[in-house]
Amino acid sequence: EFKGKQIIKTLLDTLLEDYQMDSATTILFSGCSAGGQGVIVNLDFAADYLKSKNSKAVVKGFADAGWLQNFVPYFDYDVSASTQMQSGYTMWGGVVENTCKIANPGWEWLCYFSPFAYPYIRTPLFVQTEQFDTYQVTSNVGDPPFNSTEWAYVQSVRHAFDSSLQMIKGQNSYFSAACFHHCSSEDTSYNTITING
Image 1 (cartoon, rainbow, N blue to C red):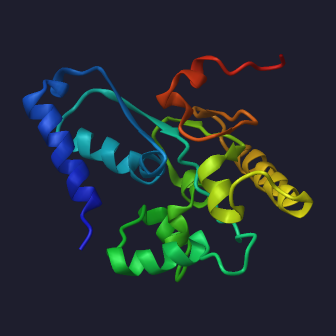
Image 2 (cartoon, one colour; image 1 turned 90 degrees about the horizontal axis):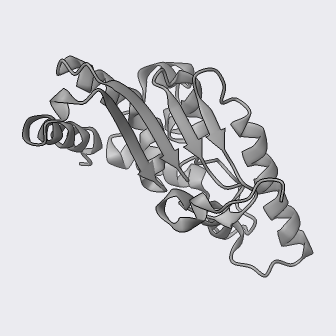
């Protein structure tokens, strides 16, 4: 049995009780890659849990390289993320956000994909993801160099990122460079990306 939500509760309890997070005025719930995807699917859970513990902190999320998409792989022999999530949801005893679950009856596992989960997030969120996210590109088409048909597929990945990120509005925001990278905030490249030259 997988216990992701229990791990989050235990971590937050430890930070509140042993590291004075109970006096924090702002808490940033963040992660990179699978951790960034974890932010997207657990941000409201963490914010609600902190509120139940009488935290007065403003909670915000930062998801780096966690904008997980539901791509059909380029090669027929690759197992799609869709198949993995569908199997995983059952194996993990998955617990997804309830309004997303209600909106996707029989397809609850889709709530692990960011474009499906995002519309139900209430807590402020900043998403950072590359349009050529190396994890999602390489797991769906392989490593460069790409031939012309593979490159066309890679371009479709870029367009899917660009298109799906347009839903991020209001109190939320995103940054998505057209770079072949993953988890930019964890290295110096995040501070050196140049926009328009």
